[in-house]
Length: 120
Image (cartoon, rainbow, N blue to C red; front, side, top):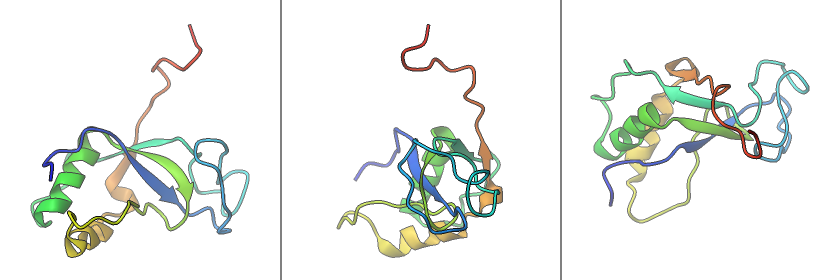
């Protein structure tokens, strides 16, 4: 098992209607449901000052990866829930501890200055 995350994670947000949206293809929030959800493709990062010391080892690996690489909103669902494929290499109790991370522990990342595919 690796002890470092080297890419962004996917994230879900609640659109208030439980509707199924294609990742990165449409916005939720202002066009549906409560109007509070960010658009698909928004990148979030765990705040640098978030204390990970009270989390179990595998959860800390994920949390430190979220601080460094962030996550991309890719699906509607329970607000700021992390998803992944089941694996014998992960400890379920460690992963359950990630539920303590709340939306206010994250910050949106301004990606407006980054190059866009097909752009100049």
